Image (cartoon, rainbow, N blue to C red; front, top):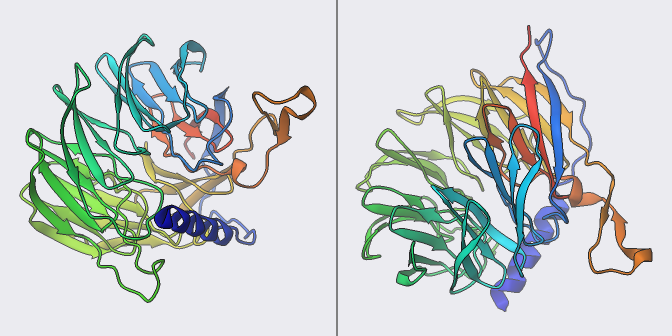
Length: 399
């Protein structure tokens, strides 16, 4: 209870500090900035704002799989957003969605992991130690789930039986979020609220190494937060990870530190153009050299904007904020190229299981924000708002 209350208090403080005065937007030397168009919209139902979950769409071919905070899993056409099928689960969905082959994996608020077919049929459900708020990691034999109590548990992919569980010591206070497991050939790697990246043997669940990215330091529990909520990233034989109140680092598969630089972030690194990009906790966007971690550029114009996960798209970097603004930056030098406010339609939301006179409410505050990670596709960028609206955006390059 102490940790739960502390987490709620922290979130309230962070939300209260995220609103800043509107600043003029300038595109500096850009003569004709890229334009952003909305190709289609799809309403996923009541949004994630009240539950603070970051459900990210998953793509397989031209089929898009989405999970709503209300507990519905759906398949959509990427071309036009039309629904192919949907399945309602009995509980709100908090972790997912992961697609692998013919299987989908989601976790629900009651602490259960569900395996579905890509046709929408429930295959099995398994009990978790507690709630999961991130997507599972998957390989041919097992499913790996990180829960908010600091456990990483492996389940048999075919039967749902638990194979092993690893428990990591948790701090008194942490941000509501967990790192999704990175599954490698022999290891499963994830970050914990202690500020450590831990690599476990996939078959046995035994730790092989751990690396600390941040050291708790400060007079209050808030100052001592060092969560790793972003998923570690694997590229060309190197693991990249970042911590809040800590650093961003490049690690070898044996746990050796290739380089480590300052970089407090809730998200995970984005790799493109030989660089590592990171949206920092204060709203700065930072570019690092992949080889040695040297700073390449820094964009500070979005400080205080409560930025979400940054994503590489075409030649751009895309990022959205807690007020519903969508930004495009140059990958080369971080120049701010475009800004669009993505307002939901309509500006009200239906409330299920309520009397007819009170079964809707106007959208406001956090409903307009964008906290779920965006997904880059061949057709455009997928963006999910806190109000529960999914959009496909296309970008037309400047001339």
